[in-house]
Length: 639
Image (cartoon, rainbow, N blue to C red; front, side, top):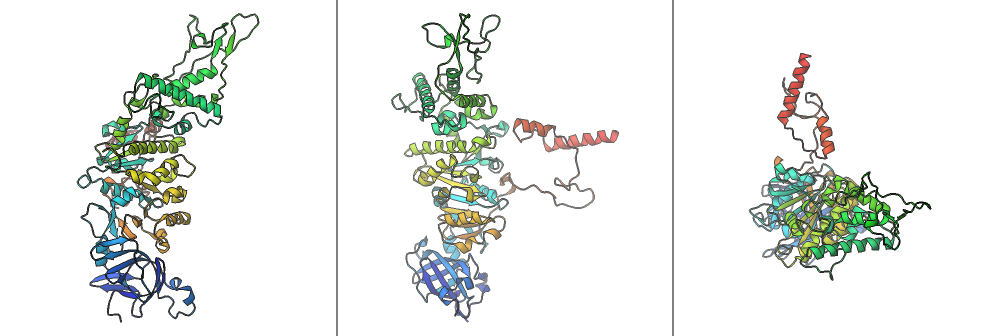
């Protein structure tokens, strides 16, 4: 028998960071007791310690049994199942603590030991250090907190992946709750892009919530994304669409630049002059005037007057009995003028000619006019106090917008995009992220910049808009590659990592991998992880709900963790509804919901009202529903 109860065996093969260990003759697989604590011997995902003088190497078990036997010994090894493959990940020094990376490698014959709870405390045990935040507890040692380093988590980016129902949203809510603790991190700055409106309920007491249809009674604010803060390549797809012809595109660029220049001359903006202005400079201009002018340039008809140019004064408009124009149009309301058709009769002295414009963008301009009249686009094309008048003047500028998104007294800002038309979701997410990135990039030497007060951007359901072909991927790719230098970090949250641009996913230094059943998704996560841990990732399909494998830079060792569940008030609005609600089966018991509740009279009038309003928040309370049901039942009894 072994004199040292922690001894596993000896190193017999070294291949870079991957080593093979042969179990000692006296090592018994299964359950082992050391100093009153039980340990599972030979578990995939377990830890191994290899002493080298004053240094301890640490590794993670990735294979156990016959598959771990070196190929040249597979046929002659008598006990071929007493091998394990270990991936080295870091080393511990008595004075310096634990560090990722390996400065020296083991040699054949070095002993390998079980990592005990005391060792784990040396590696993970910093619960009172503000540089670390607790996200759960080790699955292998429930008394030891699972800690992640905040610096690495934020600036080196991270990803939370897991199939539907694996506890992904709850994990994110728990992490954000810990990071926004006012006592430890009073200047935390987190921006959540929430496309399904899940996190407002969970973080309401510590977040500024922006929605398209806000509930002002609850302190929510209106979400506005000013179109004039977008670049040309962001603006065109969500307004006029694609313009392929170079001449037509150039004419639109010239017109936008002209409008911005005119607005700048009437209302000066610090930092920009007529010489430095470009079509992408975030200067307010009226898109309503842009539409009106281009529409009239192409569609207007004119009374022919010899020697006079075609101007607004010579428009051939429909007129009423009093001779006044019936429909002269209204640029700010998106209403076009009504022009008389061309007329060229010989005997008629009053001839009407069509505009001589060479522009061929009639359909794109009509599409823009339709959006100007569509209330679904008001958050973008009529952005409240950021809406320019026809001269380009606005009540509030971008400093007010950024103060709301990034400088609020609340540590978390939630941009609820659930009311945005799906066809422009990717473009708007990309625009928001680009606006935020540009603002912090140019403010990098100011207190408002990201270097002094870093920003964490959380991208919920990232697979919906981070396909490599979508425009949002361009902005996120830039943040992934360059954001670290300017204090901008991101956290991707996705149930389909295979649909995310692999360039973006590979930049995530830390991965929280919850249960993943799809082999393609697991392959993408494994390829993006910084550690070679195939055996550990093979466990992803069988993880329990709320259990995660955390790998990467923010954790000292890859760790299998039971994530701390936040209390019921802080859980996202993404829980599965109960088909059957368990409860007391005594006589008279009424279930609060599910199929086993007492059937109530149905009234879908309010459902249709909410559908038309595009807002799921009802004005009725639960007591109102109970009163209506009671009245309905009483009337039924009388009948």
